Image (cartoon, rainbow, N blue to C red):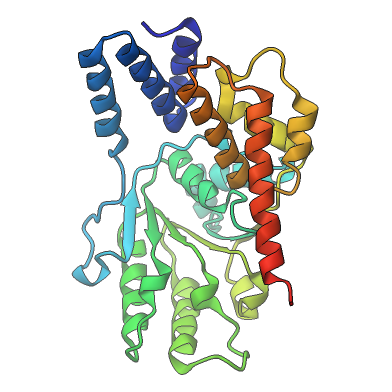
Length: 327
């Protein structure tokens, strides 16, 4: 039978819409039951988790045949509480949500809600999660545009596909997420610009300027310096993301490990070891420590395990920096 802590964690994760944590704890219960000799029950729990986890994943809906594989659609369940960000950024995201919910009132006065958003920041700092959170909070489908598949070598084909995407934006209200946006939004003044890329950017500028739908359009980039300057004024809001500060690193670990944190925990050392890591890197470190804890049949994640996982992530970053530095 599941332990008291596991039951509490299951209930808490369910009501907080923390799907991944719920699945992790459920699998831990399955492993426990298997060790008790309850093989049938363990297998049934495993099958339930596997079957339910595939719901809402990318599936094309009512899309033009030419958009197959280009737009991935999902119903997200990422709660706003999953975002660990500075308060000023949190307020601005709340404003986007509030304006969307009150869009009818704004339209009476000839105003549009904020619906064209540019997200800027290093990899793993919460840009993709923000798109998922907005889709969940607004009760909209999240349609992710595979930007790398949008660009083709055939003249005019990419712009034609982009037109189909904006036709979809007009026809089906949803959150449309353009990740790695600099792949199509590059500065037209750069020497390495090619004709097809310039045509794509010009088409995007035209389509986003003309768009009057209720859909939310989100573009994300790690390299704002590469973007064409004309793009910035096409967006209603520009949000900047950075690596988590000290208090945010602690909240992130608390959110991810929840009931697995013991009463005696070296918070100061844990928070210090996470300095300079992105949200995603801390997330991975927490999950590595949790998996090691489960496989060791422990009931709580020790600070030593988490510190070791964080140090591994720091080492990877140092090696990457050394490999990029000139010899």
